[in-house]
Length: 180
View 1: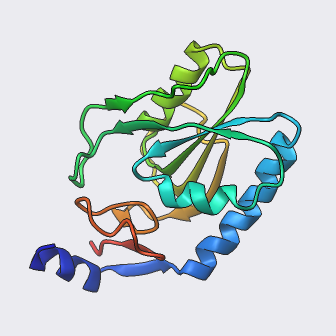
View 2 (view 1 turned 135 degrees about the vertical axis):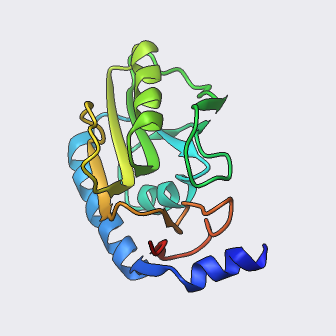
C-alpha cells in the first residue's frame, strides 16, 4: 500500500461505525426474513464487494437457503466505473428459484440491474435485491432497485466493510467517505 493510500484513510470521514453497521444489518435481515422465510431462496452475493456484507447478513437468517456467487465489476481498482465485466456467473440452477442478490453498494445501479436481469433471463421465480449501502444522489435512475438496503450513504466515494478504495480497505469494519 502506498503513502497516498494511507493518507486517504487519514483524511476520510468515518460515516458508519462497526456497531452502527451491524445493527442495521440485523434489522435488515429481519425484514428480508419476513418476505423470504418460506421460499428456500438462493442467495447470490456479487463479489468482491459483497463478501463482508453477505457474511454479516446470512448469520442472522434462521431459514433454509442455498448460496452461490457471481462476480461482476465496473471499477477494476479505480474510483470511477467503466464498462461492466462478467468474471463469473452462478453455477447453481436459477430456474424456478427465488433468488436474493446481495451487493455492497447501489450507486447508479448498473451492476445490480445486470445481475437481476441475468437471473430473470434464467427464469428465476422471484428476484430480490439487497445492498449494504444506498447512495443518496439526484442522478436519474429509471429502475426500482434495490428491494432492500441497510444504510444510506452520501454522494461521495465510500469504502470499508467490503467496499474498496483502489483495491484497498475492504477489510475495514467501519465505512468511510472521501472528503471532497
